[in-house]
Image 1 (cartoon, one colour):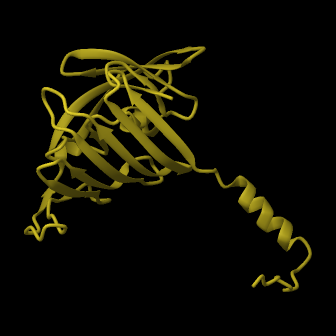
Image 2 (image 1 turned 90 degrees about the vertical axis):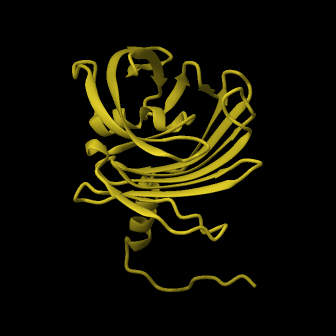
Length: 222
């Protein structure tokens, strides 16, 4: 049964509600294909100021180093663009793993390795992860350029060393790593970001909203 709203509203109230809806950023669906054809990542992303909520999934075929796997994640960034919480669920033919990692305003990371799906013992670790504010999820193109957004990098900013919490796949191990980001130039295809990790540098391409378009050696957006 259809029910019509006949509530009387003050003049201008309906227009105010419409205006509020109009300024709410719409959600986006972003999809990346692995450069080797064996990986696909898709994420629904909703942003509001510095805040971000992303629901994503990675499906990857087996390689010489890793088994075939499916990974789902839920990421929340705070109003400064730093990670507030990340949930990851990793599935291979042999096992399932679950990880919850959250960051407090006091700078403490809570890493919960308990696997409630299989009745595993809950294990929560408190750590500072070398002062990290960002997370890098292995094999994810979405996470690759998020620190650029938080730092508000420009070509004039120069290179910035960024401590990060790195989440490995499929074991979901968490360790502190150091990355270096530099927004080097703007080109017609997008903004070029030099990312240095383990003394190796690649040039990422990101769109005007700061999301990855091309991550050399990993994936391109489709």
